[in-house]
Amino acid sequence: MIIKWSKNFHHYDCLLLLNINRYYDSRFLNHFFSKVTHLGGAKFSIFITAFLIYLFDMPFLMIPLEAALALLITHIPVLIMKKFFPRKRPYKNIKSTKYPPNPLEDHSFPSGHTTAIFALITPFVIQIPILMLFLYPIASLVGLSRVFLGLHYPSDVLCGALLGTFGGLISVWFLPLM
Image 1: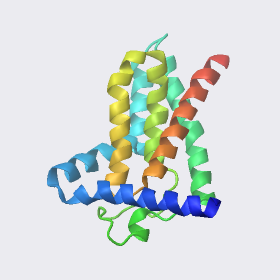
Image 2 (image 1 turned 135 degrees about the horizontal axis):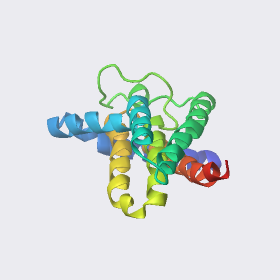
Image 3 (image 1 turned 30 degrees about the vertical axis):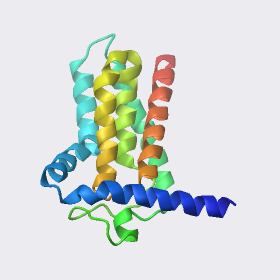
């Protein structure tokens, strides 16, 4: 029963991936998602967090500090999960997947870019709820970009979003206790 469910889940995960990835040849979408995806990358996440820590004063300084803690506490589980769940990236498993030159070679599950962007935005959304109207669409586009570019399955992105959100919640709860 579990094996059958697992095969069905993987089948639909692949179908959704291919339905999104089939638009890869659109110059506009390819250019757009190739840029958006970097908002979840390590360089941008660390830079923007450090910049906001420098920019903000108390009491708002706590928000980027919480975001920094969220990035830190979610990075380790992502590395561990990639090691213990060695899922190959879609472009390595599905021949028809289109992908950019020089793609990442590490494992697919979970999406580190999606984890990072959701970890980064969650403290801001919790502390200043109106920001959800702006930040959740951006974070969702980062996740979508990972599937569009053929680098992750939708389930990798979903798990990354949940992990990042959970890390953000923990940081908002934990940092004031320090």
